[in-house]
Image (cartoon, rainbow, N blue to C red; front, side, top):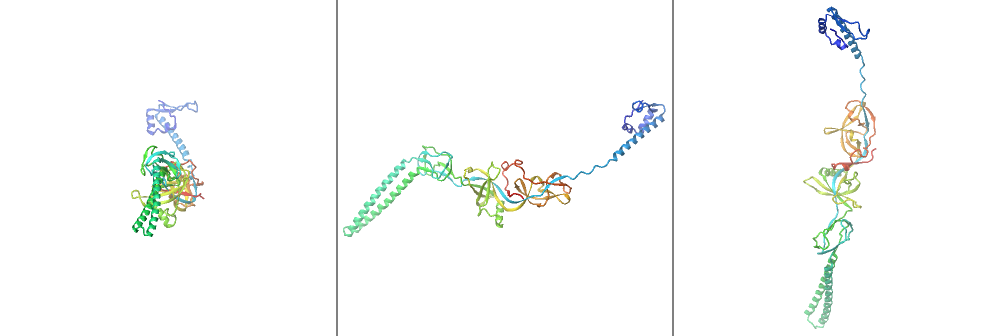
Length: 457
């Protein structure tokens, strides 16, 4: 029986018990002279008739194999340990310093300052319409015509009664003068003279009433021409020609003035208290007595481009919602703004203060806290708990927690661990490029906070 050992693993896998077993089962094991040094063949072991010789030979082979394994292991252990990794690289910058003015954001709608329902002031049949639905009209412009013929007749009747009253006055004056002469001649009793005086006074009163009737008839005739009570945009006609319209009841159309236009909104009680505290400290004047500036944007506008000013704050808070009503006035020369339209308004919410600006990406939330990493003494990472403000031109306002001279980690925040040493490389803070984040028009209505900043230095 022949045993072939192909590698060191084959030799080292044999124990003493295996060797004894081989020796017992194979009386003599000897190496063939046909090895790789001579004939190019693998070494082989053949049976021999001497057990002692075979076993001792196997032990020598195993000893040599074990020695070779130790030499290889020692060579592996002699390798040097790899050098420690270099400190991680982070990019740092000082916060930008800027003059900050806070703005508080609100959602509201536009309202017309004046809105008029056009009603007829006389009863009659509608004869014609003199405007186009939805057009812009001027004050005094003709809108409707009611059939004037009945009122023309009434005016003529009143004028005739006026002439009759004029003649009655003339006759009464003549009679009074005659009675005065007769009384002086003692030709008539004094009672008859007094009757002539009363008749003259009654004629004068009838003339006054007749003249008033003429004026009333003339007014009614003029009211058959319905004109615009104010300038603005007119609604559609509610009644077609030929219909009977009733004095002071039938609504013919509606007119709203558009320039200027109001913007109404509701503010939280907390913001109202903030404004009153600031007014008491002299930091910001209340909108009750000062026209604080406002800026408005529409649903399709990313920027606040509409300028206006506050003109009213209500005297009570709504007990159900805990809000108070405010109102601003804005110009609307091109009539783009329409009553009922929604918009976003921001109102001056503070005085000017120095603020620090950093990118939002370098702020790490930790439960309810906001953390910023800075490179401190010895190039080691430190963390700072900060109080954040609103966004300014894509950068976050930091109200407290860091200083202007701190080196804030703005890139590589994931590598920053408190206490480790880092390689800090300077990098300039720049606001996000347009299109890198949603515009305000793409976002839902914001909470009551906003801000404005001058150019950072």
